Length: 318
Ligand code: NAD
Ligand code: UDP
Image (cartoon, rainbow, N blue to C red; front, top):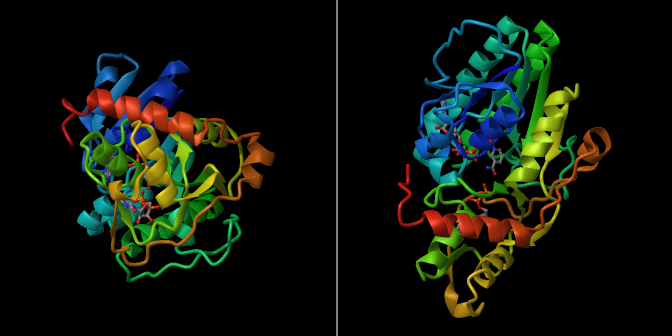
């Protein structure tokens, strides 16, 4: 197969490039490096089955030759990134999704949208099931990301209904692991960076808000299975192991053999519209894909800390 991955030089996208190449497929990675990094795909550049195209997917793209799968992962994804690039985020969720769906339609390829648990906003239903419509502030700071993804879902469904494009929608919950940027502002890389530098860990609010963190390898397996399925409705992919952010910060500290004393945690104001709780209901993925996460938070954190510790002195932030 020839697989097109938009955002292929990003955190999740680069792991997907690896996975499809390992399976013997050809990968075309389209990325404009707005938040991605060349170091994520440097090990792939010499492989004949890997092709990199520097392109902004919000601009039309005509490709020669067949494409079997289109995986649309291009988008700033961390709050710090999409607050820095609000219009680019809206454009890649709308125009980028339109162009990616257009390619899938022209090539009669299967399509997968990387959607997000952010479509549930600050949820009033817990844990979040796929049939919950969400509680999103369209004009708040997170609106640029949440609404772009909600639009992207609507567009994906419209292409399926009107043009018969063979689409899938993955609602991805917080995912972490090697190749995240240490400066992307997300909780786990930030806490690891701070612990590596011996700085206090910045917990927002009281740290009582919850998240459910999925290790990258588990997510890639879920995406892979969803891609091969014929489920057109959204499917939650995430780890239902829900923790408070304070607990996550303390967990990170334990991986550094330091005391989890309060003095190593610094409380900062909670950002506006920060969701209070988030946990996926993955009954659907379990039932239809036979998928569930297998990597514990401790093991995932250990692998992530080792990777960041090796890379910290040399790795450029972009
Ligand atoms: P990332 O920032 O590491 O990767 C995104 C990639 O998309 C980057 O390489 C970036 O350069 C590229 N990109 C952005 N705009 C582009 C454009 N206009 N044209 C071409 N390339 C563009 O982020 P990530 O964490 O790997 O997220 C990947 C996808 O998964 C995103 O769509 C995100 O919304 C979704 N997602 C991620 C998470 C998570 O926890 N990591 C959770 C939910 C959804
Ligand atoms: N967070 C924090 N300190 C940080 C970065 C994030 O306490 O330095 C909190 C943030 O307020 C949120 C949670 O950790 O409640 C997860 O944040 P992240 O940016 O990783 O993802 P998202 O908010 O998109 O789920």
